[in-house]
Image (tube, rainbow, N blue to C red):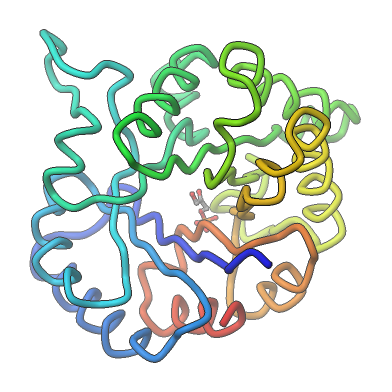
Length: 250
Ligand code: 13P
């Protein structure tokens, strides 16, 4: 039985004062949740703040991106070991907002995934199709190509205890979440692709759903057998709503 995981993706929001309030509310409201794991992925400058506020709580923290390289002359980049220095345990890899705005290739994303694993971070690897791709009926082809970038070079075993987040691009920030059935069908497809190569890895893999999750639609989504939790954008900026989502998964 996989434990559910709910991850807040704050994106580029917050400041020291507002983060303090939000994290205090998270700590207060989420401390009693024993059956679900919770993590918050903050902008880099606030990792120290997350570490100092969350270190003795049941809430883990992490980042929203990371370098594909271990060290070196890469101005502006942040390495996996730097994240580890601040106690980070999770890192989002290949979020579509980055893949489109910063032209991240599948190969770069695969390298980041491996860097995270090598340094003991749990990668949260985002996959998902555009609306045009869904309407053209090629969403499974798109997602399997995204998975293959890792599978073809590194095999399926690397997915053991990793996290994949299915985030249909048309559902992100639009208020239009995938239905439970749409999401379940893709999650089953993703797990099946890994299971063909490594059944144990597929069973341990958590597959989150992301895209306009709120406390209401989480009920249907989180009831699906292959949906192991959520990656939450907008609603994670409101402690009440985030708690509502975590409560559904608890
Ligand atoms: P929203 O929850 O705001 O749609 O964002 C989802 C997302 O991009 C999580 O990574």
